[in-house]
Image (cartoon, rainbow over all chains, first blue to last red; front, side):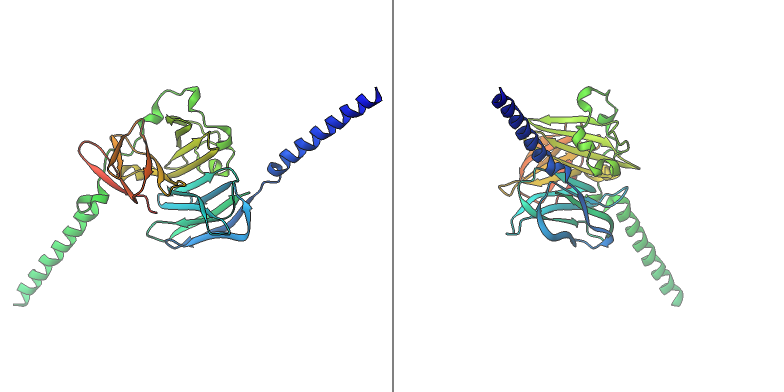
Length: 122
Length: 186
């Protein structure tokens, strides 16, 4: 009887630990602004290169009424490009965290435009 | 003699100004061709349950900054191809947004731009695939009937189109009487 009781508690404790580990990564997810509020020349690149992370979100925000071409993408430390998205205007790309990457964004219009932020999440 | 030179100079100046005005008014380049008035009639369709954006999309900071309503109010499901769904969403100010959700891939993306973009082109997203080609999805204004890339044409349905395996850096959107070249970069 005591043995059965102990097993139940052990199973419950294991389940609790598993659940905690499952949700720990999402609970700790944060957004990081890595480049913001600057005039961005054509093809200039905003990037976050402190350390590579398992990125799950990348965004470029020109501001309201944007209509210019933009690009967000990610690059692994080995130089492989992933999750490369070209857009018209403000742009976001959300995806599974398959790769450890650095994030980039760029104004792909022919003129300089104000960019409020480039943002990523891991 | 001086009077004649003055007249000649005035005539040349008038010709230059006229040519400049005509160019600015859209008579001088294919990138200025206009189709429709930028309206998207799909947004006026009666709402259905399937038009609602997934909560995961509404939770992104992009939604708060760009959508007219934080809840994505007014969104319409434009197309579904397999696990890929395309939505149009009213944006803040004069913007309109295109949102793509691929439930199988676990991905989502969005682009919001001024509605005026739809007069002369498309609000699009071009995603690079593993083989180097690109999947291009686009929102176009009323009046557009097709999109074409690499010599392959696809019909516009509900103001939207999907082009798979695009290798080139541009595409064409158009109607029976006019077409517009869209540079998708890359």
